[in-house]
Length: 328
Image (cartoon, rainbow, N blue to C red; front, top):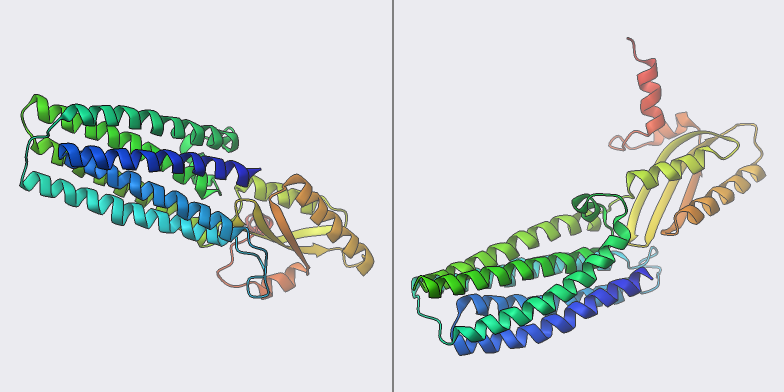
C-alpha cells in the first residue's frame, strides 16, 4: 500500500509538471521572460525527476539475488539522491545562469499578461499536486512535528515530491513578483533577479534533499521508538538474561533488517533457545511489519564485549551498568 501511495503521488506530479513545462516554455518564448524560462526549466527537471523516482521504485522492487542477497531496496535511495543532484545542477544552475544573462542585458517583457495566465494555471496544477503529496505525507507523520517527520521519513519519494512542489510554488511566486514589479517600476532587470531567486530556491531544496537521501543511502537505522520496542520484545522473552546489542538498517521504506545479540541463561537447552528465537522473530515482525529479516546471535555478554568492534555503539544496558558501577 505504501508503494502504491508513493506511485500515486509521483504520477500526479509527473502529469502536472509535464503539462506545466510545455506551457511555460511557450510563454517564455512568446514574452521573453527570464523568470518564466527558469520556471520552464524547473518544471522540465521535475518531470525528469518523477521518471527517475518511478525507475527507482521499479528497481527497488526486484527480488533478491545471490549478488544482492538483501534485495535492491537501496536503489530507491540512490535514484532519489540523483534527483537531488539534478535539481541542483540543472534546475538551479541553469536558472541562475538565465538570471545573470537577463541582469546583464535587461529588456522589457512583451505581452506580460500571458505570463500571468500561465503562472495562475501553474499554481493551480502545482497546488493540487502539493495537496496530494502533503496528504500522503500526513498519513505517516503521526504526532511528530513536520520537520522531524521529514527527517525521520524513510520514503524519499513522498518528501521529494513534497519539497519539489513546495519549491515550485515558491518559484512561481518569485516569478510573479519579479514580472509584476518589473512592469510596475519599469525595471526589467527585476525579471532577471526573479530568475536568480528561483535558482537559489532550487539549490536550497536540492541541498536538503541530498542531505536526507545520503543518510538513507549510507545505512540509516530505525527510529528510536521502534528500536526501543524491538529491545523490549527481546528482553521480555523468558530465558533472555541480557540484550547485548540491537542493530537495524533500512534497505527500503518497508524493508528493515534487525540483528540482535542476546545472552541466554546458561542452563537453557538448545531446543528452548531455538524456540525463543522463533518467538522473538514472530513478535517483532507482528509489531513492526516493515521488518523483513531478524537475525539473532546467542552469545554471552563477555563474548560479545570481546568480539565487538571498537567503534560499535554501546548498548543501553551496558551504559546503564557502567553508570551503576561508577563511583559517586
